[in-house]
Length: 271
Image 1 (cartoon, helix red, strand yellow):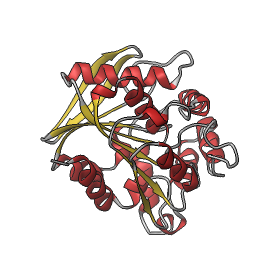
Image 2 (cartoon, one colour):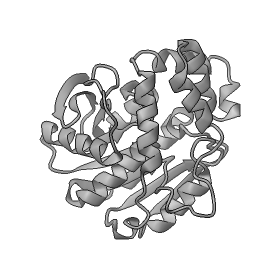
Image 3 (tube, rainbow, N blue to C red):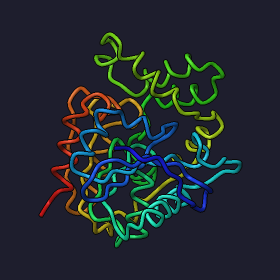
Image 4 (cartoon, rainbow, N blue to C red):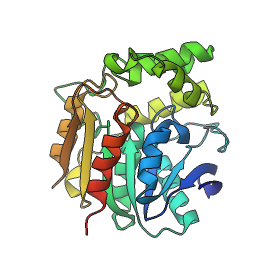
């Protein structure tokens, strides 16, 4: 059974979806995403083992409006407030893309609140990667989607950016993605504010102090955040493990939800 609720946070009232039973797991979404973007197959698989909560960032859907710029630290404060509302002193945390930077900041500033950490298709910040780019060519497509006034055009740009060419070519995949992506309102200006916040994030000089068991997951053909950035991120976090999904794009959990849920659960459910 799913539960829709609201949590009061520094960014205002934040909407969340809660389902499943088990150890607590907080999901933190990336740029332009919302709770349904985790995909039904992935959420359903996680809900078999976890009490899963996926919340919408400030400015997204029925969460409070975002009228001014914010930083990643502001979003991690929001995440901590959601945990407070739920009565969770600690929880497992999974963040993807921009949400991965939020998860890093939460774990670095509040390590006692994060049991185990999953960082998907994300990076440690521009200060970490001095000799290579973090950003792939599809970042430009996300920016175009944020500035587009045409919902279908924006959905096509987001789809092309977030999945592998092989997955994109499968019949019905775009229609499924477009229905889910368009089911929750995501204002273009909020997408741009999220992108600015993400671009300014840099945890490179702090990651060596991260003392939380961490799994880093990345698709090998991610064209938003390059796979090399995920590899470098894993190398900066003591004791972390890297899992690469071969020939998979940015949203690895969308392309391979069952495998992604299995990999996540195997990391989090450690006796």
